[in-house]
Amino acid sequence: MFISPMTKRSPDKTKAWGTKSEHLLRIQEHDFTMRPGFGGPAVSVGVDVQVESLDAISEVDMDFTMTLYLRHYWKDARLAFKSNNNLSMTFDGRLVKKIWVPDMFFVHSKRSFTHDTTTDNVMLRVYPDGKVLYSLRVTVTSMCSMDLSRFPLDTQTCSLEIESYAYTDDDLMLYWKKGNRSLNTDEKISLSQFLIQEFHTTTKLAFYSSTGWYNRLYINFTLRRHVFFFLLQTYFPATLMVMLSWVVSYIKAVDIYLWVSFVFVFLSVIEYAAVNYLSTLQERKERHSERGLMPCTCGLAHPGTMSASYSEVDANTTGNYGSMPRNGVKRERMLVQLMENDQITGHVSSGTYSSAAIDTHAIDKYSRVMFPGSYILFNFIYWSIYS
Image (cartoon, rainbow, N blue to C red; front, side, top):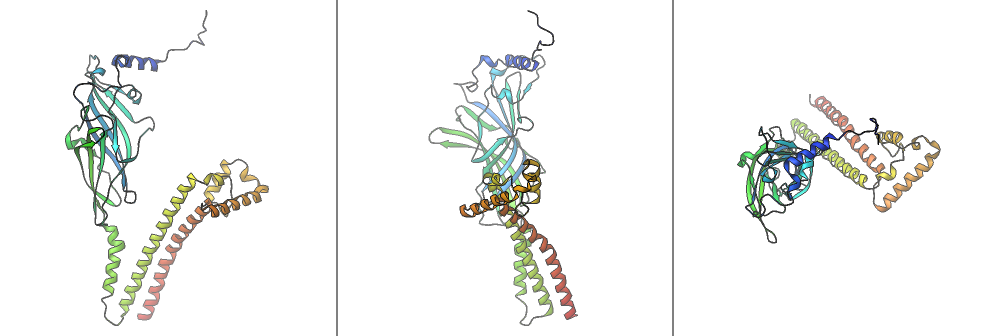
């Protein structure tokens, strides 16, 4: 049988390389569902961590979010191979699924994920004597119980806890590879409301009545709240008000000026709080709309109920709906019906979200003009009367 050179397929070198690597490590000769040295002493797994960022601290949810490089070190004699130059071999995440790796998890975590851009951020390095380095990049949101009784003069201590899920201390001994030096942090890590005072590591044993004792590693960090913002927004205005109450029984010109100035400071704080509250409320409604009724109005472009940016997206993504004026009345009726249904069911339509956004920006825009203008007018009247 003759095979044309045009139709003859060339061998897949990638698959051949993978087969040779697995053959060199004798993957098929061992049962990697069992831990190394099963039946003997516990396998020792060293850990070190590089903290990349401390992304958020939430007093409302009582949690924090951290991105870190988590590295494991252990020895598995089943992976030993012959090497003339004593060099290690490095693999990506595909080999991890075929060998035994420690089953670490984050205690009290709410959410966590391994980064996968542009590929899974996982690295496996195997040395000729069977030593293994397993590294991955993870973002985790974990619980932090905070005592806010001294707010805003408080100091908080949070911990990220790492533990084996299945193996007790009889099968797996988890430890910090280099003690407290096993934890490294980026010097550029900073938070808007907190000063990071200290990172340190500890190790404890955790007991579960149904399964036994487990080694648990702790990444502890202490946060001290920045007080300057609260001095400016809370303590200073309150102190000024008390000082103004100490004036003598008759009112002087300087008292009037100080009182009016204090009123302007107080109104500025109120305006700032109102804008932030409305913005937070709008963000919550937008998140609710993404999970709820937002798809229902994605094809309706009406200048009175949709924002300008949303209408432009509609014109580009909804086919001919944006260019059919004869259906305008029908779309208006649909939108009105949707809004009426929302009022009956308690849902808020996207038109309400846009109105909230417009009101928030309007308050901020008018305040930038009215506050300076009013204060300049007050100064003009004040100096006209008393000069």
